[in-house]
Picture 1 (cartoon, rainbow, N blue to C red):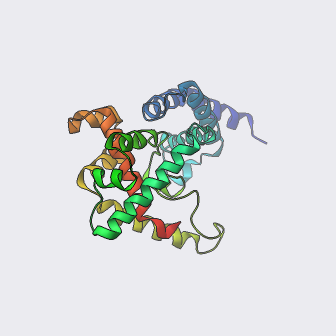
Picture 2 (tube, rainbow, N blue to C red):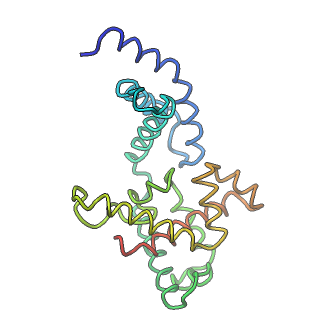
Picture 3 (tube, one colour):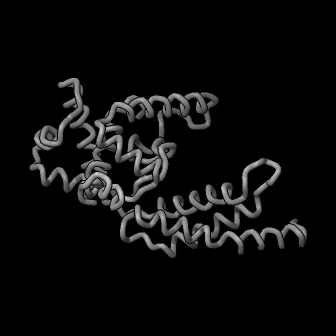
Length: 235
């Protein structure tokens, strides 16, 4: 049971930090498919804020805004993941591209080029770019989450996630992922850095690179799929 003082404190935190929910929602909506509604993100974020207000412990050292921001983002991402807006054909094409990239890079010993990938897939370059654009919906918001979704690897890592070795597997995965990111072509590496670390949207990145937003989307997708092709040992 919560005391009246605890309830009032939680209510005060929620009222004070409600604008934080809207700020995070509007920041994320620019990076999500058009059918994701900002109101849905805000509603999910408010649930995250409510949870944060109940579980926050000042003695742990983190500022409430920092702690709440993590909870809010997490709730919004959970809401996004519930929506299945990506057709199965898009997932299949992403896997085909990943397999083609791996085949070319294993054969040539270097980064696979756009034209080579399209040829391997028996597609025109425009058809290949169209597949990349389709696969760019609903990307993740941090490198840490790449292990949890289909951007780089499959839905889960091999093995029992409750195993005592899981923490070691996670650490090894992140180390391996970081190494693979460092080996990406320069432009792909830059797009990932600007998108995930600097939290710029595709339009802002396009202005920096002097290319269209659509082209940034293609580069982003290709980087993610290339990483997936190089992380097959973790599937």
